Image (cartoon, rainbow, N blue to C red; front, top):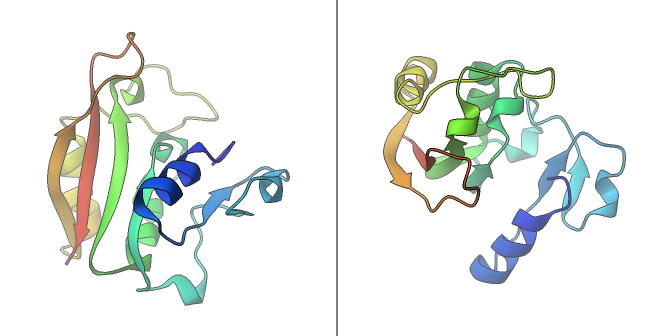
Length: 144
């Protein structure tokens, strides 16, 4: 969650309970944030969440495990929204951003990884906040 900007937005516009996760040992300095590896879950989170949002899926060292972990936390019918841009394409993998894939391959990967438990509901074309991006989408995934 870095600085917690997303939590501020969700709190303001959706008036919801939320927590963000952050690996840094400074996580607890950010409101509504815990220090946590997003590849892991807590038992009390399983089947208890309505919405998960991430713009850092490219930070995952194991995207299949990560997405399945997140989806296990959603209630039936719950939604996971992944922000995905041209900056997440296969060029430029780094230690901090090890997972890269084009938008055209993401629905296919999600379908394979889900093993029938969830699927892509829609791709929402989002306004680009960075002029260097070719595209920006929200991948909306729903738990069955």
